[in-house]
Image 1 (tube, rainbow, N blue to C red):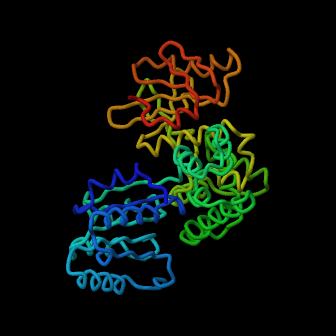
Image 2: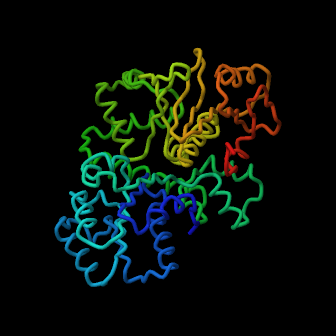
Length: 404
């Protein structure tokens, strides 16, 4: 197991506190492995394994179990241990009514609670009300390019960062692919299985979607248009061309369901000068671009879209709130904020001539503040100008701190 230290660092201050640790993210992004890493750290700090309880609610042992029986089982195991129990509940959304149980466990037992779920709205309902702020949510994403590079360097399979990045463009960051050696066909099949599992289990079954074929067409359209501006009317036109009809409300419901399943992200637009959120033309991003290659293909052809998707996810991993910027009619790919930090970023594949350079730099030159501004591309030379930093995108992704 690769030690995902950035996540562990966020958890450590809350271990042995009255705070429920909640990990959310797309299926197979490494949430269960993070639980194992935390358990390993507890054992290293002399917590006995008999005081650690793990339940995976995707196991058939817990299929059709009701809330009361599961609660009683956990309570009995905790009581028999004779001291604080560290309770790990994996894919907890599979248990109906789980919110009440988690709150009761926290109140009734001497325990430390860690839960995971493949649902971005895990904390938007009853649990948030019950806990009243006594929780921390940690979104978990597939491997970053930096993490993949560390794994590849240990395997000594590829030496050049550019070659590792080419592999990353094709396969994305799903942990299983990089922790195991799979050929291209097997990797593609694995990603297709993840995608189908998310659609069937986390969306279609959960939301009782009847017209599965229509739903899949909408999601396929969104995969093709990753990192492009999205509007519901464009989808309606596309489906009309395909001789299918759908209401705008249904389109937005489908997108909401895909967001809830952590498959898609929507980045809103912001008027940088007016500090206003613009209520239209969000951009859509995918939780893992490897899934796009497996389902739709053409990641290398659509390299500008994929590079934007990679940078967007990297900003989220590092704790930034991300928006699309608009300044004097010009678009800024990303405006990212974290605490008192703010950075502006433009992303391009290459900058081969002065016209492209003017397009990429002019949007940032229009922003009149002193926060760091970056133009990222795969070029091997430096075109920095007027305080705007031009840097190689691969080097940027491997940097530990962008604003030191």
